[in-house]
Length: 307
Length: 111
Image (cartoon, rainbow over all chains, first blue to last red):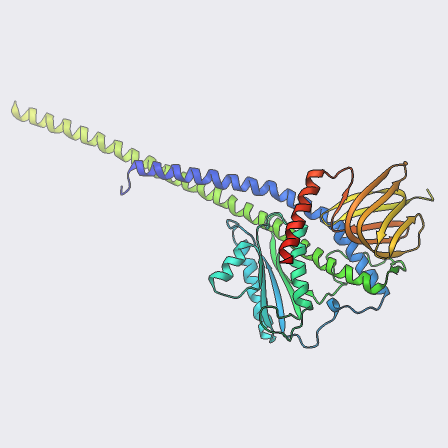
């Protein structure tokens, strides 16, 4: 045996403590997922009402708004990538970054310049390590995003969208805004998704009002235009908030899954090491016995020879 | 009941209040608006300020909102605000913290 019994015991101990940590992280993630889902549910009424208001407004008034107008010749596209702040969540961050790469590739093949915005430290680190330019980053809230975070991101993105795309340099405007985040399908399945957010296509919302619902003939005060001016940025922010909430639930689910398999692996390792350690111990005992027996035999032989 | 309406006050991250009410008073960009049951459909922009609601059982609540929308249709009043807080749920410490935050943010943007 190359490694002594003592060393195996030390390994078992260290794996055991790792297992305790991963187990604790798994439980924490599990308890937070429920909270994250509740938050997503609580945010739903606002998103629903806002979508309803926007579609009513767009249906009943023919006002144009910069946020809904398709630029004739899109040249620059912003991509917001929603990643996590912390690792140990399996492939969560890398799969959303991969999706972002695919999207960026597609945009470039359409002849658009890509401007990157990132939420979450993992994405920030990924881009910094590769020395790629990032317009703006937001960090520190990936596991429980607040509405303020969505608002800050929304303001920056809308600002970039409104700005003139003929400019160059740091404040150059963009013609499109895309959003890459992870959609929470279930505890087991989280899918990275990319959607185009701006210019807005109002009809496709996360929660459409029922098709047979007749929208009332609203009167707008002070004017449809001013209501739209207020409403659309909020709509954008609410969709970003929705994406952040989905991403946080996905992150927690991914972490729970990753930590569960880490705990299982630790258990396997402990089992394996215990077996080897037992074998080593047994081998030691056997060897001792055979040495004693050998010694006794040798002694008996010597005595026999002397007599 | 004929002269009541369904009111819901919805903030970005939760539904703050919903129930039956008789009168809603709010401040819009175009001025004060008072809504009673069976009001005509209207959609308007709320100014930051307070919303005042008289509920069916002679109750009354006031909420602080930071602007948003009011939409009235089919005897339903929906108040959508990014932040909304009922007066009897808000605390002085929380309000002070928010105010300090806001001041700090304004100072950094001013510079």
